[in-house]
Amino acid sequence: MENAKLILNGKEYELPVVVGSEDEVGVDISTFRAKSGAITLDDGYGNTGSCKSAITFIDGEKGILRYRGYPIEELAENASFVEVCYLLIYGKLPNQAELAAFDHQLTRHSLIHEDMKKFFEGFPSSAHPMAILSAMIASLSAYYPDENNVDLNIIRLLSKARTIAAFSYKKSVGQPFVYPLNDLGYCENFLHMLFAVPAEPYKISPTLTKALNLLLILHADHEQNCSTSTVRMVGSSQANLFASISAGVCALWGPLHGGANQEVIEMLEHIRADGGDYKKYMEMAKDKSSSFKLMGFGHRVYKNFDPRAKILKKAADAVLAELGVADPTLAIAKNLEDVALNDPYFVDRKLYPNVDFYSGIIYRAMNIPTDMFTVMFALGRLPGWIAQWKEMHDDKSARINRPRQIYIGAPKREWVPVNKRA
Ligand code: ACO
Picture 1 (cartoon, rainbow, N blue to C red):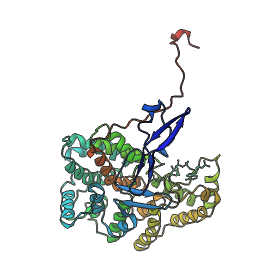
Picture 2 (cartoon, rainbow, N blue to C red):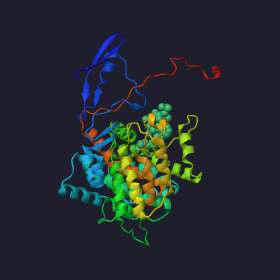
Picture 3 (tube, helix red, strand yellow):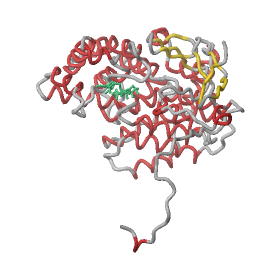
Picture 4 (cartoon, helix red, strand yellow):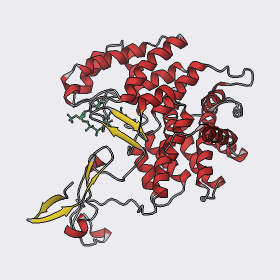
């Protein structure tokens, strides 16, 4: 492909063009400032590629999502979350021996250091579990300061974050912590730590295991979204794995990103408590003078549909039926979706349900409390963050991330002593 040409103040600059393996085209502007003195401006990075990556491919116009080349639909149907972790992080599906070894390692590293339990005592019982998760993940770097054994630290993080998440839930409900069991798989072990109490062990539910496995896979990676870019940004300073991922957890927490799953359920509950008049809320979502947004709708990249939402809508029906749960908010969610898909406001702006629209309904049917929804997202996203961090870490030519800006503040001013200021 020919170089791109950019004309600024009558002078022409040639810029190299980069083409990805799915024919995605990018203009490499990295030398543009050195040649012209000008930068490129892209608020919110809507049109800026921050890296080249071989991990996840998204075509937002066609509603395509693939991890390492494998369509999300096939992985959701066939894979285990542990397999997907391996796939994302190491770039290939594990063979039987590799999977068994990886799984064994995850089981062996599931305990957190006993001293870390003291941290939980310091948090108020009202603490949001995302606050605990990010603090505890950053703290892992104090217990495992050797940054050279990247593979072992990856295993530790994947396994211990699950224990930390379950302990943060136990803390919030005032129950004793439940330790992991070595004969349980990744998902079952988490559900056991979440739901077992001293008086009654957790009875394994294949429905819950399957639902959790699916949810974790669907959240496992999504290329350069807000939290992943944060992980890369922090990691680009050569900060350690735990510190970088902890920053990603914080970025995920916001309601415009992973925090949306909690917001969706709160919104649906609010509509139900208000008599279920979903049409009124659709009008509010369209009204620019109202601050109400249809949470779980819209996406920066998907302008057709979010393939994960499609899978989750089907799964919500199946999981609720299998668990015998009748949740009126599912009907409200479907009504909102139906109206939106036929309303010019949403159609013109290409606003479709995103991954967060139906996930909360499934989590709720699984008895997972609303506060934990974003933690569940974080557990799912861990392998993606790790894979992206590792890709950058292994790239010896990677530079520290440091965007530029256009300064719009005051021009140079003279200092005025305090007694002479207006
Ligand atoms: N409800 C009503 N209107 C919306 C919504 C919504 N949920 N989302 C976007 N719009 C409107 C905007 O007001 C804007 O309208 P305008 O062109 O008349 O000004 C237009 O659609 C484009 O939206 P932007 O906000 O410019 O899109 P952006 O790419 O910046 O934001 C985002 C994407 C943050 C996801 C946004 O759609 C949103 O806030 N959605 C609700 C929160 C949510 O569900 N977040 C989870 C995203 S998925 C994830 O992170 C896992």
